[in-house]
Image 1: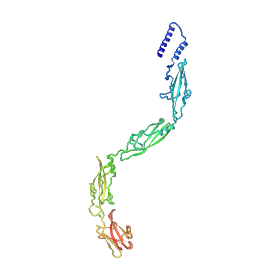
Image 2: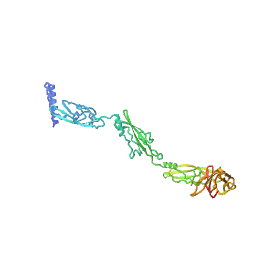
Image 3: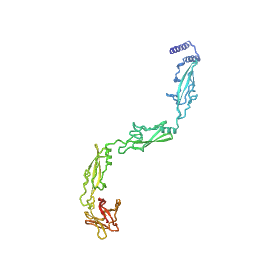
Image 4: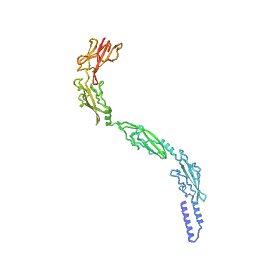
Length: 429
């Protein structure tokens, strides 16, 4: 009804103006303005909030700058009341709270006054943002807030997937990364996990946060997990771990007895052996000593290779072992005492070939209340008869005082030692 009434009145106004022109009447400009103003005042509800709202307010009611407070719309006066907002002065100037205080929320009020005495009031919520932090403060807060985004299920101690490394931080700071301490991580956060054989990789990556001339760093210790064990890893590790079990004091360069060859390796691998490259060792580790005279240096050792094949499923690898089989020295036997004029000899028989003094080691011990004293080396032999059986080694009274005694002897040549052979206990030797 109100809109219809307004349209009807406007039609009447146009009719009056038309009649004035037709009949030559001249209306004063002031009279026309009074007439229009009267209509404007009569219809006081046609002012919209958007006509009054300060343009500095964004869609979130946040003040982007000092407010422009318009004082009138047409002939209508606008009066402002900013007393309900603690961060605005009467002119609309922002009084921003210092960082890190929160934004200030409040309202301002605009009242539109019409000439007919009527008024229309609008209330606008206004949020005044806090001042921006200093660069130093911005960097400090960004450092505190900075984190790494891990793949689902990952953590700093167990990285398996790519990392989210931010390039921008809090308060518009810039972030750069140094990952050189971890070969598994690129500067963009991409992760290339080490192999199972290489093992987990641990280290620290460093973030540098910058704003203006201010910067600071933050360290992130990380562990990149190795890939799961593959069949290839299994045979490689098992091959490296593989070892032979020697008898007694044997070594790879001095094998005198059969070897124990493992058939099962690490990580569920199997091991097979090929000894075709060694004439004195069988596939099962058995040893056949070289034939011939032990004193003949040309035939007292045989060197060759045995090869292990390590397998898991369809993956295999091989590892060779170089071994030297040596002929054991003979063991002294047939001990007896020979004591011609002033000398005492220990003689033993059944020795092959020519035996020199340098091919023997002698030790002795004497009876004691607890059994025997410890074995001790004898003085150098005082005399020797070589090249015949029995062989004899003797001492004078000064070299070896007379008394109850027991000897042991072993034969050695070219660094190869025979077994110790013990004599009976001799009384008053």
